[in-house]
Length: 136
Image (cartoon, rainbow, N blue to C red; front, side, top):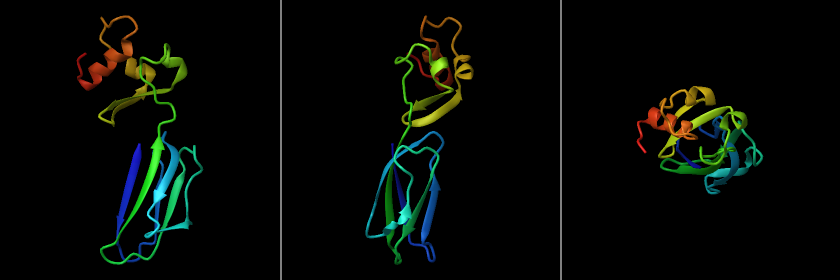
C-alpha cells in the first residue's frame, strides 16, 4: 500500500508528524527533495510498526505543495485459502473490499457470522459473504 501525502502551503507550517496506522509496517518513503528537508526529517526503520514519521518541510511559498510518498504493508496479509487453522495463527481477521477495511474482528467474532450450513472448510468465506453481503 502506498500512501501519498500532499501538504499545501500554510504560513508557519514547518513540520508534519504522522503515526503509522495500527498493524502497518513501514517499508520506505520518497520525499520531494525540492520541498522536504530530507536530512532534517525522521522516519522509522524499515520493518517498524506503529512508529512516527516527522517530516521537516523546506520554506514553502504560496501555491507550493510538498509531496511525500510513504510505502506501508500489512505484515501478515493472507487469504482464508492459504492456511488451515487461522485461529491458531492470527488474533484478528480484516475483511477487505476494494482495498478498504470493511470489518476487523477477532477470529472467533468473525467466524461467528458464517451461515450454519457453510461448506466444510469454508467457514471464513461464508462469514465474509455474510458480513459484506457478497455471494459466491
